[in-house]
Image 1: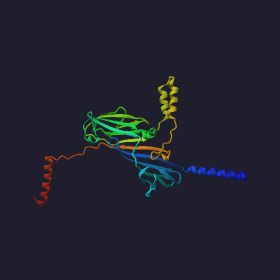
Image 2: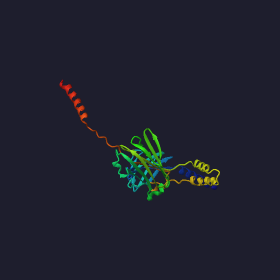
Image 3: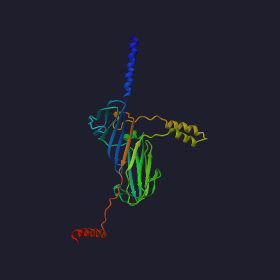
Length: 307
């Protein structure tokens, strides 16, 4: 009987452990940043997204100037760099506006117009030979995040305002009168891209940048490498090298909001670099327009005077 009671006790402990383990809360972070046309960080906020398979009590760390509940109208308790809340089964989100500003990358965009340095605010309506240099460098204080994320960068140019568009490292696609230039920066890499165009009445839409975990089809790349070296002594070695490189298990990212949160399920960065706006249209009043306006006014007056 004693052995039976011990067995039942162990069974209950195992069941409780299983039930506790099943109550998981997964967290992902999306970091949003607004950059100036030159690349300076102008604003930063983090959306903290939690998913639970049953009701849970959550404590999350972050150095925020303010926090905002995105899932309900209830105020979030925040103090001593900690957010505490109860969430039901499903999803819960809150936004934190950090009291610090930093990114894993230092992204800059510089301009030359007819070979001379130009400030972006002076390029609205510009005409001439434009050269843009898009640079990506690592922020040493946060390079551990850049080491696991690839950058996808998209620049959109107006086909009527930009002719002879060239960029050696870009994938260029035309659609509906616009040209989209796509750039990819591998995890942990630093690089620079050059874009040239003959411009008239120049303006440019926002540059979109995403820092995302890179997913690759390991088998496809392995087959490609083996096919390139088919028949050579390096064929087998190439396959083994690709297996070793591409099939390495990826670790979960560490929280960007605060390392005290530990590992999270996903981390993503969404950045928007401000555009070069179109030149404001100024109405030119000519003698002909003045005469037409006067004629219209005269006719209206005549309607009331009977002349």
